[in-house]
Length: 204
Image (cartoon, rainbow, N blue to C red; front, side, top):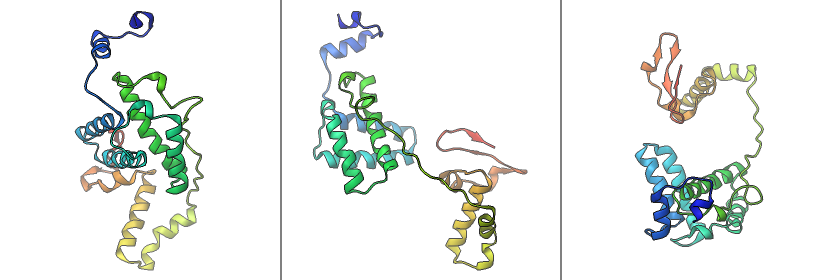
């Protein structure tokens, strides 16, 4: 009856799951499924980062099981306050924690494991807003100082760091992770060809 009233289409399998029910699931079970998918997709860096964020949220909650109805506005406000004032996390970092919670919750909704009506994020609830950050670029003189830093003979590790910084600058801000994976074979003639880890796009 609910399916007939709704405008959104629901498959027979979805309706069957709602009527019969299935194995008990909660936030952390769905979170584990999400992490497992990242591993299968070979997104190892993202897996490690998200795993630590979920682990922190689990530690904050203080229990192994967490029903989706318990992931409330009040709980997320407390978690946000803990990250900001007790752990001294930057506002942008706190946003990253909330984003992984949102990802897991949305996954549960799409799989009919959580209710849209209890969703704690969005207008009038917890809104994820990216804080504005001030970015100041290097001046030409500062770039020249880095280019001439070989004359200062710093320790070898520092010189490698300077070279990587300049290489990223020359190639319009290539990400550090992509930078570390570059090979001589990626340079063809006077051009650089590489595939971005984040987007899988080929850049040249």
